[in-house]
Image (cartoon, rainbow, N blue to C red; front, side, top):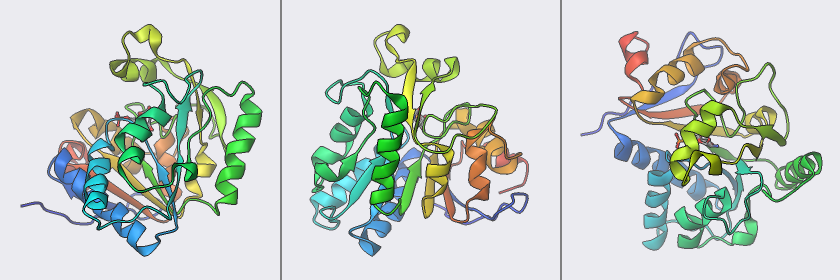
Length: 262
Ligand code: GLP
């Protein structure tokens, strides 16, 4: 039986909710429950969506509910965090393609209402402004789903000396290129740049839902939520958000638990 409880991280500047899952499947179900509740409560709302391996199980759960007729996405709008520079939507490594194949094509959503940065945009400043205007025209994001990179990145906000604000074009770090090489034929195929929502855009979401799975993420989970708030650990800025829910499995929580913080 799964155990689910909340911990308020009293060492953080703002309280957050940590929901403990047994493993990845359990995490996916718990996080999907939260996102499904959001859709039920606000069927015409805006979901901020993420890519990577972490959300795949959650998306499968949402697809199952939708296929059973228990969840209706017809009024939902979505905005994705990021996209690789240089990849067309049809490229099977693009984040637009990921979203189509892992979620959009399987639910009753109007894909005209699903936004991903344009990987083929050549003017980084113009693309950033265009994307920020979309977010603002939608009235902001109601619930933003996030994963976390091994180096603490959220979306593609890489460790840096400052927090970027709106959507911008970023050079990926070698750590991210290495981590994401598993999705490409060779490491040389991994794009070196991306468009990403900035920290301010992410922080403006009304609610944040972060999912963290696996032992490899245990140290960064600890650093992000129990360490200093610093742009060198981009996810740490979430300590300043007033409505953060982290769903993490036991492996990801191993360091936090060993330190008696959870
Ligand atoms: C990519 C994405 C992030 C994601 C991260 C972690 O770099 N841009 O949004 O959180 O990968 O991915 P994974 O869930 O595969 O560990």
